[in-house]
Amino acid sequence: MGEIVSIHIAQLKAARPEAADNAARERMAALRERRAAWGRSIRQRRVDRGFTTRTLADTVGLPSPTLVSAIESGRGRLPDGVLSGWALAIGMEPSEFAAGYLSAFEPDAFAALRPSQEEGRPA
Image (cartoon, rainbow, N blue to C red; front, top):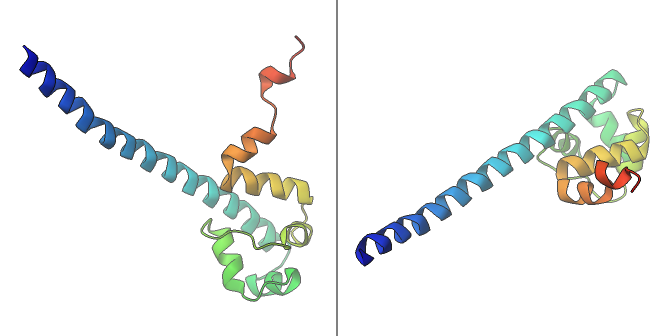
């Protein structure tokens, strides 16, 4: 009987890393999609405002339109000092732009800054 239990425990131990790997892959896929969705929304705003990647890069002080493309595809992060200028250029309030960016790229930090529905209710 001890032998059956040890095999069973070994199987469970072997399954845990695979399950954890699958969960990590699912989280990363969800994060990539969240980033891509946010990027699509700001890309649409850029296009609606008549900016090319080059003109937006020039407007906000980025050295290359490639950075605009990378950020809009969800693969790049905003360099320091461009958030407010980018937001205003595409017709957004900087706080709204920052909230979307933080939600897409740092969801745990975003969640920590937003009170939950439970916290907002009177006791």
